[in-house]
Length: 547
Image (cartoon, rainbow, N blue to C red; front, side, top):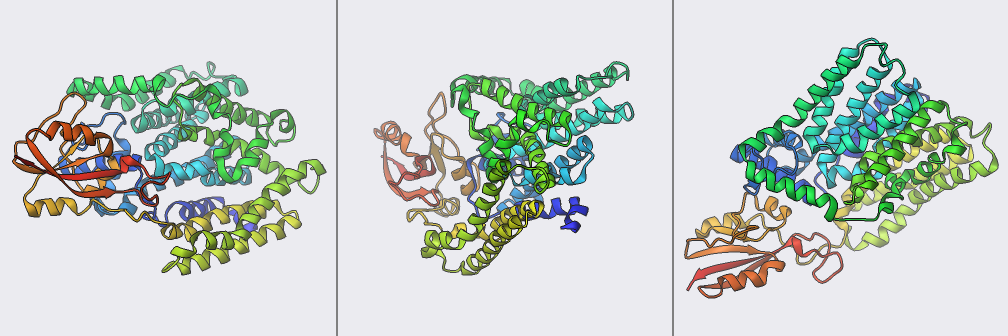
């Protein structure tokens, strides 16, 4: 364990490598990933680098920086390799953990504490999940945390004020170019508020920082806003229509009560119990190693939750920026129990510690039995991964109990990281053993088939982005938001989702005959008629012929 403590950066990158860079092609492409991949593909194939598109239609809801990076990897490694298309997002997650370490080291001057913070951040549940669920988020928050790192130096040190202000402005701009003002509102603004309470911006005026601050603001604005201005001038009608729709969503779409985010600490996953205890400010404030920085991370977390709660539109994944200060805040609790468990913790204080690590140990020990009963019918060809993952997780579970008995809590902490790494390295491939949709049918061969038959293919209504990605190119849309167009050919194929099927038949019925040719179903695990089966991942191919 001494080597691990003395080589924190190596450990951070080993953990990041294990958690984020293996088996990237196992999980099916998600809706947000598909949107990103399609936009990146059309940058390469159609040259739509600035006026970005999805299915050859304007796609201005998100700034293009993450798609540019994805397109670069697609250009180098190919557009058919999902693993390499996902790689830049995973690398950004590792960078987030590394910057979390650098920032923690700067504010705490303690390598062990900074290491704990970084590993909590890398292993928090929704930090891992967001890389697949919504790739834009990891970019915008990763760049913003980097900006905050330089901003903190700018606020606290008189030297290098120009370097720190310019770099802070650069990364704020890059964050804005990744997902607009999301991270500025949910991560930077609460940090500035918390910093004001904790440090009160002392010495800001005496160090003559107003002009560098102004330049930083201008630089961030130029980098962050230029693309929006370009699109506003180059394609004003589409830009304004999309902006109006997106703005309306903030107050009318996915509206949830103000208390919806109050269980935010659960999104840290395996750190739920320490995260909750770290938020007990009156209990912990006189026990932590740095009271002022603890106040900063605590208020940063709380202000972030409050600001997000004010917005009517709420989704669980919007809590990702909260997990960054929460990881730093949780680090205070874990650093406290690691350093003082044997010496000064009362018996009552030890109860949640024993419960937390015992629960993790039980997960490792129980894994072989639970995994077997859940997956036994689909383990053919995957027995190697099952055996290796069972041995690794069982051994880690036993070791956690042995170290806990000896009250070696840093070892228990590292073994928890090892458990998560083992799951990602050895257990994730077992997703292939889960029950599969018997009606699953990919659409990837349809384009070639239609070309061989000399038929053009269209879609009626808005089919799922996953379907368009799987198809391999853009599919002309017959039913838009305002009008319906009819192809000129006498015979063609039309993809229709179930929700639009009746309208499709009504439109084409008088003059055309139509025959159901095939049903494409991208629901990977849920069978038709079951709870998890989504109609939006279903498309019916009709061959339409003029009478």
